[in-house]
Length: 141
Image 1 (cartoon, one colour):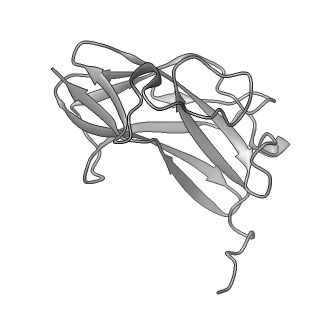
Image 2 (cartoon, one colour):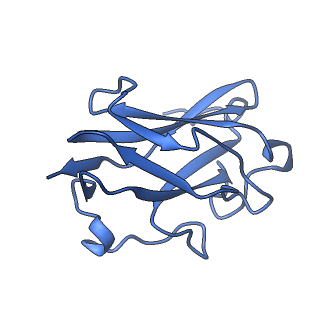
């Protein structure tokens, strides 16, 4: 099997929940802060804080290359089938990363109804646009 070409992909965006970690790849603990084997569970009416980190494809412990800083990252909420959903929102809907690769501003997922969602991040990457997805977010009663 041939390895994917790195001509197109230079960076990858990690989407994590809770406060920003001190390291780029925190190890999630089962049951910690709402994380389950199915996804992240929250109750309707709660807001979920999350963070982004742009890293290099070849070395995920390193921040994204310099030319990637300060580029807009478009954030959307998608439903379980992958369609953009109006049943939840992101504040703010556009993010940027700093020199360490982490998002500059606090980010929040705000559900308006019950359901299963994911956060989608779309960002420029070399000759194309890439997209990264969060784990599932389950909004319950």
